[in-house]
Length: 484
Image 1 (cartoon, rainbow, N blue to C red):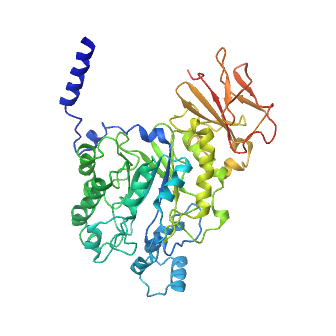
Image 2 (cartoon, rainbow, N blue to C red; image 1 turned 90 degrees about the vertical axis):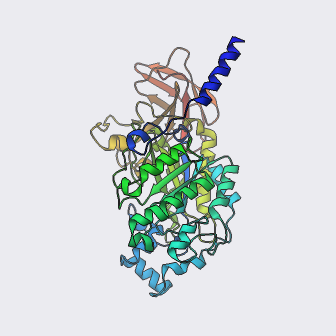
Image 3 (tube, rainbow, N blue to C red; image 1 turned 45 degrees about the horizontal axis):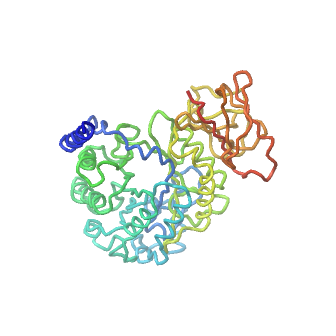
């Protein structure tokens, strides 16, 4: 009875005590912390979809923002020659970007099919562009139509459908978390160009609160913040509302793009973002985003060779997770509402690998070292490449032995996972000794493998397996209980 009474007392106290209240300043907001689910889930799908899916064009320029098809509208007044030549040839010099809206019909959009592809990929969360810098909304936003003076959202516009709402329902029904990318600014919004203060208070803030209240996202990926500091955007006030009063106050996760002064700051409240870069290390919560090709929005100009292979994508995921990060892998659907088949294939290949080896990804954290190099010529910690990693191309086809990673490591509790980019009959983990009665298991077939200590190293014997008995992509070894 005493135990029951004590339990009831604790329940009463927990209901009476006020929840943590956050003030609209970073010192207070940073006390919140980042909800744990984000670092546990590791893998998400990014979706760039809007009017830019109609022209779906950019020149193919690796590691260049000019290869982003979603920036099509902005490149025209910039007089970028490739965009101008393409536009004039195919649509005419007098054809305005706004005239693409009636062509964005999404007539083949099947949200349940999309959700099934995302589920099969092994991703745990999805992030859709609710509104990119062009200002076109994928849900029924009255602010969009009012300020643009025309149908400028998917419900009043050509699709005649709540694309965001329908996908949100399907994704959540599939058991995945749903989040939204949201651009704070809009390139050519008349109110933005005339009065930025009014744009923030009368357009941006009501619009993003409407998005949160209606669709209850697990994540908000802000962008387009760079023209003004956080105070001009009223970002601390918005985040205080989000963390205190919104319907997702407890579990929502936000990134670091809330003003020209906020990226890579405020790590107690926001996670750090990088795109088409080397990423970061385990000293902070971070996420790297990349497309399967060189663009986020669908680019019809890309060829098969411009798309990362199954192996490259899995290596990228492993590399990022081994350094403590998340991968947000982007797809660009077509204007009629299809996920290109090649993208579906790539996502399915990642999912097939994760079905077998997901234990080495989900819920893990970075080991004390992310890699083991195959050469004694190990980069110094002062070398930026030590923690930033190498490009996928270097991992797949190393130029030198020094650039070749022999093993990736992740950790879950006291268990260590060793991920092999390539099969070898003998695996040597340097500087690790197995405890008495220690063992190793190959996740590909759940079979134990011989292991022994040799000097200061751990040696694992895979020679008993013959060609064809193991999958071809990235074997994973689990060593239970070896992390001290």
